[in-house]
Amino acid sequence: MPRVSQDHLDARRRQILDGARSCFARHGYEGATVRRLEEATGLSRGAIFHHFRDKESLFLALAEDDVLRMTEVVAEQGLVQVMRDLLAVPPGNGDSPADWLGTRLEVSRRLRTDPEFRARWAERSEQLTVATRNRLLRQREAGNLRDDIDVTVLTAFLELVLEGLVSHMAMGLPAENLGPVLDLVEESVRRHRRGG
Image (cartoon, rainbow, N blue to C red; front, side, top):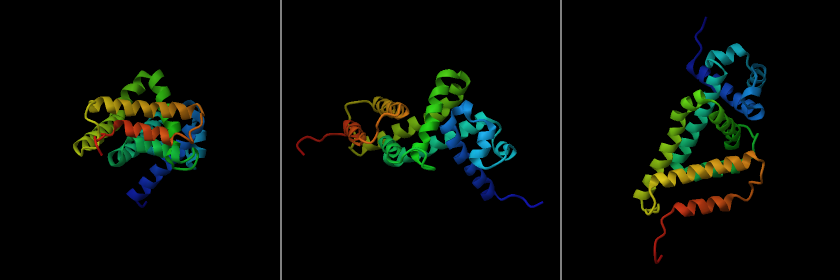
């Protein structure tokens, strides 16, 4: 029997994550039954759980994948850009930043109700905090970030704005005109030079 290539395994894993993302976003964690996961991914339960031990492992991998993508954006462009990306593409439009919203909402819900999940998630969420803090430190060194407030406080501020944006979108409130709000958030952390 021929061995399956690593590229094929990686593509299959990506197919599962992409299908699971839409399934979890649409039905929530509990509602994402194995049957629904099979439909969303186009694969059998055997194929899905060959790559992931169980549904929780699949969900954690998906959430970790989203954090990794966000961390990459933060490192290059900052956390406000993650928020802008979230606003830029409507939910349900394939593999878009807005599809992350459903996963993020499920993560938030499970953090409140599941202590074991909270413990497993802490390390993953720290990656985003570290990336945000490092980006802010680089911006401060470049003279672009205000220096009258500790970077830890600025990091917490930006993370709270992100959580507020997620809550706003989760409630189905209008998000089309939030660009100027994000401009204000970005401006509030910038260094203002006198006389110029």
